[in-house]
Image 1 (cartoon, rainbow, N blue to C red):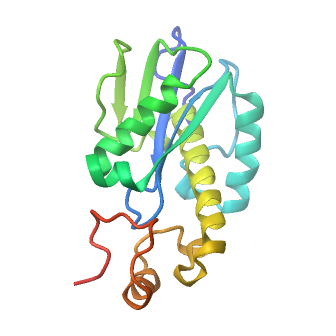
Image 2 (image 1 turned 180 degrees about the horizontal axis):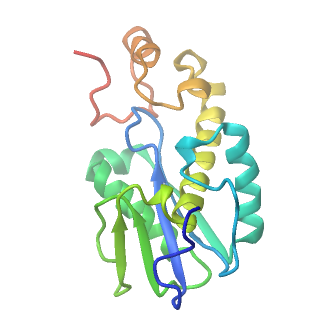
Image 3 (image 1 turned 180 degrees about the vertical axis):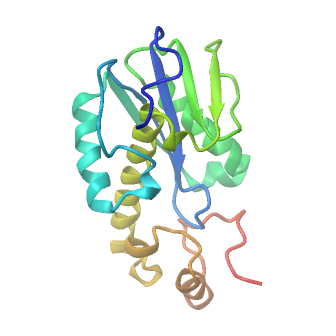
Length: 193
């Protein structure tokens, strides 16, 4: 069972991002504050769950969370400030967008920059350890997947509804044939060597 949060006595948010390794589309970050009595038997790291389960959990999280915020950081910003900084910027924007200001931030991964003066802790594989980070990972993933599925309608030849912008062999081949779109990250190595 995942733990609820790091500090039981503080109003604590979990934050995570999705799409860092993609060649196209935004990096999407989410921040979530869950109620102190929140429990769910199969809430865990979004990568461990089927799409159907993620969508079920998205509805539960949105309904039961104290508050949540999801933001996209677009390709132009990613190319300008690099993917790590864009991921952290997305997390900052999602935390800033929460309707209740957290007293502590639990961050998935090992890199973060201070947000205002709020204390934080980075937790490697945190989405498999804490419910609020897992909830943030599910919101980030489902919102980003939805965004890429919509983009797919305009650019079907990249098959984004399937690969969501990740560097699959098929995606790289489509870039080789059709060139890069305006939604590709120009600072990334789009073609295989």
